[in-house]
Image 1 (tube, rainbow, N blue to C red):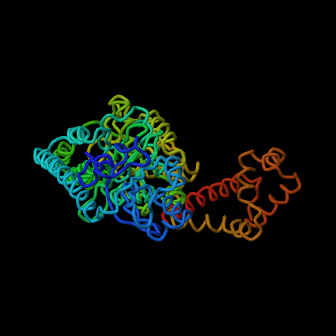
Image 2 (cartoon, helix red, strand yellow):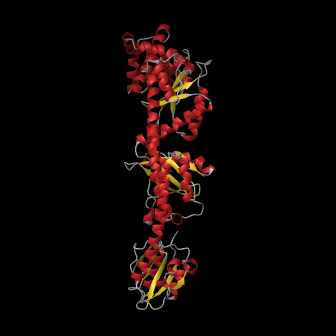
Image 3 (cartoon, rainbow, N blue to C red):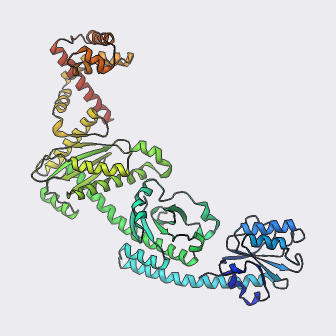
Length: 569
């Protein structure tokens, strides 16, 4: 219910008022405020305000009067009431033409009517409407609190709100992920996740359009799929947003016409109710997620020693550890780099990282469900630790289908994210979880070394690399390797000639000089110069099989050890 200019004219005190322009607008223009304004207008007039004026200071000058009326119109006032009899005796035709051109209401009132009496009567009407709206909204608040006490489902709460608001409602967490919604169009629901990832929702910047009216300052406005969407934060006790309420306005509906005092009250009560609901839900979910994450980490680290105890905890968390699992470890390579590109849309790296890991985990769970496999997962020390169920008759299966599905979905959602994967072997028993995890870690590190970022490596394909790593741990072998390789490393650093790369290519081509020169895009004489330099620096002969073996082994172990040092840092 809203007061209109037409309602104001029905008051007894306005019986001698005469409408000059905008008669067809009387029941369309709403009244929220009323005040006396003389020149200058500046920013003293609010939207939907009835302006009372005597024309003092401008009634004697047509240009000044025209400027005064134009300023009132641009302030989006509801109407201008001019008292005739002292400063203005007749409203000039130029002013009437201006008002008609701008679809604006001008009303003449007799000089004898006191402005204070008009304001008193109008404010009485406004206060009466506001009180009735308050009574209605209080009933809504009581009903909402009853729903909370009954532990009602969030969708039922949304249906209740939607009945009083009259349009679709969406509730999200603080990252924009939908927690509940009703009557959202399929096209908008499908694109919501993309809007959240791009930082369109939730909006984090104040929208100046809504700040003209004090009633609207709590709201932010977003345009999505050609529709206006209102956003309200669902606050925690600390004042931080734990989620958002979105209202999808009907097509061709303006914000100010939609946001009546009653709807504003209902929405304010709604966000308070939803805050209570989300606080309870989040406390339960966060505890459950933390317990699940801790359990998976303890499995991976081998910190659970009693099968009965582990199995009991697994059941409480919804896991079945009696199934066969292999471990897959994923390492997101470039999250900090991506954050630098988007950090203006987020409060901190930790906030953004939580958002990203949550989306990645969602896709991993979806991939497992699609393949009808159980999955247990945690994110610890910048690594995704995944235990994936495998068929009992394929216990050393390569989970390529699973990772293909994960990466295919991530390419659509997060195309810039690069993840390296290490895949462990299956091992029996409770200790098998730790063994498979250790396998996967080794495979991940070796894969990043040999293939670079964004590749997969299976533990069973790392046998020669594990031999090299084992050799590298022997002090005597390290001395031999470093004495062999160090002259080449120092020379490459000083001259930037890449003798090590030259030898690798030469050895790969089985000592064929012409083939090696072509592969390196070098002149034959330049290659021969490099090969002689390798022999002179190392004291080894490139035609002696034992020397070739020693140099090849030293380079491979040096590269493996060098990479291991980098990853530890």
